[in-house]
Image (cartoon, rainbow, N blue to C red):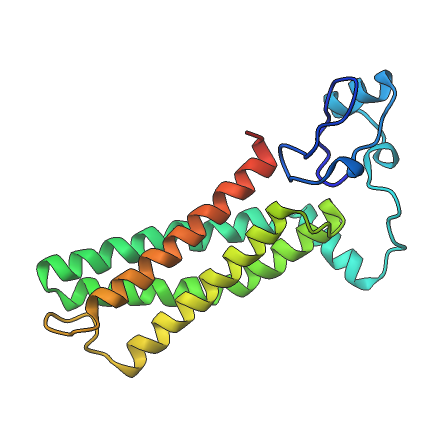
Length: 201
């Protein structure tokens, strides 16, 4: 009832393989309805989670954001740019080039500016598609999103405070690179979890 996964068998699994919801979130459906849901022909009322709220203004906004696929669109910006940020930072270290360092920094700024919309659209998807259920997958996705925006914001401020942090001889340079790599790992893992929700294992 959280992510729409349909399990075929005599009883429900202990946890959903997609969203990790517990056994009590499964509901038995007649075989005919199960076939229709798998083929995408079941009426919306049959596949919606039970107990949905009357639609208010915020619910309509969440539904609109989900309908236009705002989260999959916006999340590709930081997930696509963070590897570029790390690549150009590494190139700046290898070639001792401030040009590469500036490219890395400007892309990082774009990541920070994009993240609020990523988090907001992700929240809207979570509410409208998954009923705001707090399963382990969603806890991890939320945590990874917060980690990414915090680490990237720290990196931008770090650059503004110490504009020599990317230059050879700066004692903080390796720590600076390490924080970049942590942000990239968090974004990659969040993307992996999103892929599991959409495409399955």
